[in-house]
Length: 103
Image (tube, rainbow, N blue to C red; front, side, top):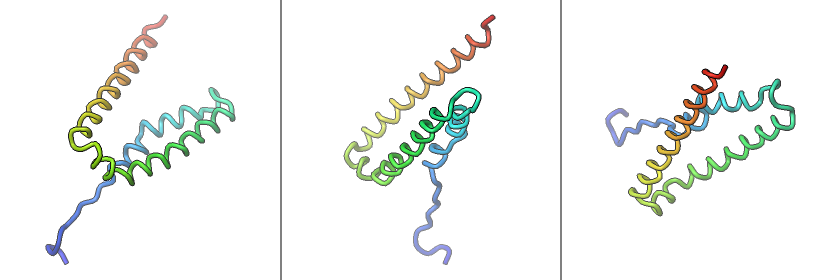
């Protein structure tokens, strides 16, 4: 019945991160037939299938990990990951600009 107990809205935050458009694009680009042979494509597929169980284990252990590192540890990790993501993004943009202006 509505209004009794606690209502919980569930949104799978990890799914967009794992199966994001960027992840899908990376998988498609790494398995392009014109650029990579079948062995390289098998390796890419193997890496993708190896990462998924690791992500599952980390998601299942997230509450335990959070208890160990605490709120401040989670904040530090989040900020460091943000810096890494920003540096990768800037590097990609700069290499794209260089490639665009090559003669």
